[in-house]
Amino acid sequence: LKEFIMEPDAEMILAHKIRTVEKQPVSWNREGVWETIKGEVAPAKKPYRMYFYAAAVIFFFLSVAYVLQQRSEKPVSEVMSIKPKSHTANPEILPQVERAEESLDSPISRATKIETNQIVVPERNELVIEVPDDPQNETILTQVLVEESDPVQDSKIEPIIGRYDPLQRTEAVTGAKRRRQLHKLETSEIKSGADYKNAILIARIK
Amino acid sequence: LSESELVRQCQKGNAKSQQQLFNLFADRFYRFAFRYVKDQTEAEDIVMIAFVKIFNNLKKFTYHEVGSLEAWMRKIVINEALMCLRKKHNFYLTESLDEENPTHDGEAFQDTDGEYLYQLILELPDGYRTVFNLYAIEGYDHSEIADLLGITESTSRTQVFKARQLLKRKINLEGIHYGT
Picture 1 (cartoon, rainbow over the protein chains, first blue to last red):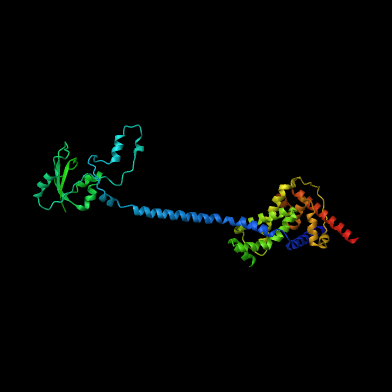
Picture 2: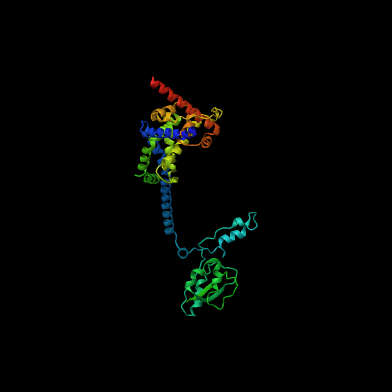
């Protein structure tokens, strides 16, 4: 029993003495070790700063690019009014649709032929005539417009007489919807579903 | 700064507080590591690696009371010291004796100077010294030592017993020497 009791006492005395000794200052390469520790611990913070700087630079360039893009971009309606192109030789349908239809028989599947439509639809050689509200001028204008040098189409020329609304002008000239927009003209002579390849539009401005 | 405030500052990454913490514990941890590895360069490496781990893991530490910080740091230093020892010493091959009833002599330790005891412990063979340090000074039990060193509990007991016997013999010899 005596031995059993003495064991923890002896260990406690020994531990206490050793720990007291170890608390006393000793000469060793403390400064050198600290310099190494400082170098090892500090780099852990650097990458985080680098990430922040990199993110800030990327964000800055993206914002600059976005602003420049916004400045260079113009509204579609503005572009359409600025660029009056002549495409008399082209058919009525959009160029993309035409190409897709031409290559239906090719070995390439149709799915690969899907293309994005152009934003600006080329305008045809349009002619908008402003006619004063006088029915006598209609005959004169028709004679002036048809000249001998103009290419003659085989199909019959059908005049469409009605009233033209300037607010619908931009819509009336946009390709695929054109025929439907013609129905908006207030006229009794327009034929639903008719093919107006050679139509002369004579309309009074509202 | 109080110990808790020092911990808080170090957790924020304050370099001055980190240096203050290092200065506070570096000497004792150096001597502590030296008691295990008995080599100045290795002890310095242990202190260095241990403090890097301490600073990197200090955010996980929760301060409870006075002494809890040192106890937590001591465990890190012990682990580093044992890793260093494992590289050059196979504790599994340490000889194991049959179980004996160890005899203790508390008075022998009580009358001996601390610095002298420290030197005597350093003179013990690696296996004895490591197990004795862990058991008698750090307060680990034999099952914990067995897990740490990959040995059996019986081996751990034997190592402690033999270390004590050696220390006692050295103290007695010195007593005779000083007495004559």
